[in-house]
Image (cartoon, rainbow, N blue to C red; front, side, top):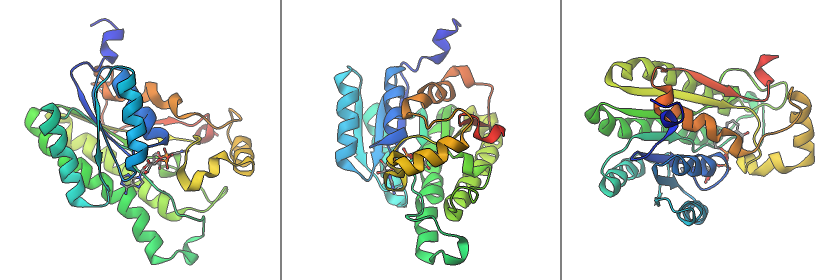
Length: 260
Ligand SMILES: NC(=O)c1ccc[n+]([C@@H]2O[C@H](COP(=O)([O-])OP(=O)(O)OC[C@H]3O[C@@H](n4cnc5c(N)ncnc54)[C@H](O)[C@@H]3O)[C@@H](O)[C@H]2O)c1
């Protein structure tokens, strides 16, 4: 196969959760630009509307399905609607995620904060993955990309304490390894991306503030935060035939943070 052809997603159908903003909107665009039909799932209908409109403006197909990934029934509906609309489901990007509203050490963490972050960042990955796998196992093919974090493989306490987020992302990292192994024989690749610092709305948009930008830019060997589109290529690689021999792996895109 020609090298460039390996990255094409023509005829594929991709579900991207958390596609209303930030990394998810970039992933949805990337899937479409590489040739896939896209289903956006998010709690934010207005944001999803913008993502879908952008994709359609470029001549590609996309729909929005309102979905709270922490709710099992919503995730069932998201995957069913995908298959009903486009006939199959080839790529799932588990991207929807939140962080504690305020960084706090664990002894100050409220039970509600613990539960609500895990509900989205971990249970959401479980619900969406299980429901997508029901279709992928039958068709004996599929690509699942979990959006973890560098804080799934290191702690963050030296910068800011977000223990619940880190617990969830750490679980997503090892779930990725486990599912990579379980589903490799069935023709389904499960891998993850561990981003470093990207400018998005997460954590109330702290990444846009000068104080946060200075702190994490000083910490990052490349000396800056990244833009969401800087992850498009990694997502296309993991969604395409170019990564067919990969499973259970994490690709870290972090401007050098974890190389230190
Ligand atoms: N921005 C970064 O620096 C960074 C770094 C590492 C990992 N990540 C991960 O990337 C993913 C995307 O985050 P982002 O930075 O683009 O943030 P973001 O806040 O811009 O986007 C998150 C999206 O998820 C949606 N969402 C939140 N709760 C949801 C729910 N219950 N159901 C469905 N959708 C829901 C939001 O509406 C939003 O559109 C997250 O999993 C995050 O942990 C981000």
